[in-house]
Length: 176
Image 1 (cartoon, rainbow, N blue to C red):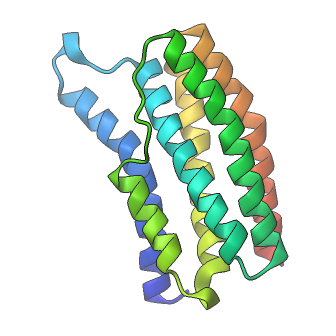
Image 2 (image 1 turned 180 degrees about the vertical axis):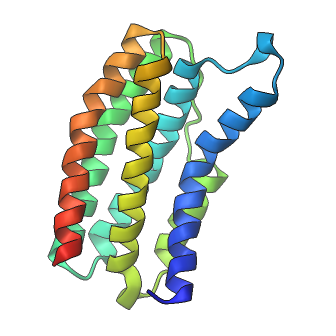
């Protein structure tokens, strides 16, 4: 993998993972009475991750050079759209405000996908999506271990089989 390609992959992963990392850092430095609730943190981060996956999947569905990448992109966008409906519903029920648009870090990921060369796009997609799905798995498992709210834990648990399926599909596509 070339150094430019590696830099783009790392930028996409860092930009998409940054919201979760920043919320953890903010939580660790905030006074005890102002610390982020793990359920709120999960909902906010999951929503931004879904917005990212919807946009990145749609880009892959159009820009992928292989039918597999185009199909995976479309599938990831559809699954993330469905998951985000549940995340938004739970957030609304718990009065957790969510941004309606992708944040700056997600927009950076979108730009990285849009600006990737055609020749490098499929590899960028498969590499970055593998890393992003590993991060999503960790996010869900953290919520299941630390979260208190049953509605949030339920939506987190429901996403695990989808994450596992996507991860298996990415592994298979990467071997081709």
